[in-house]
Length: 130
Image: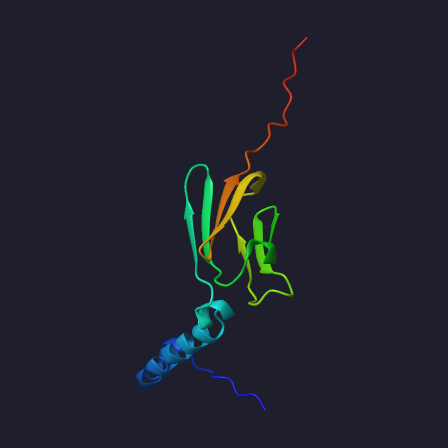
């Protein structure tokens, strides 16, 4: 059986408002990324004119155990199956990434990706008027 309120949300009693806020906070925390709940992988994204710098904590993982894939605007970072720790995360950036000029560096458990913005190619052709 399903019950639905027939009153608009603005007519709810004031006693229910704090409970709804608490429920919203609980759902936000429960549906957060698994690595954020376990404090296993912290990520920081900085942007500038040339591109983005993404820093990700991946302690206990060597560079041979990491797999980084770039596809359009999405960068995926994950560990291989035989790695001692499992990490899997994807970031969607606002513009396409130039994989040819991007650089990845792993130092002291911190993976730093320097992702360059892909410059749009000029595809228009100029016609001469006869």
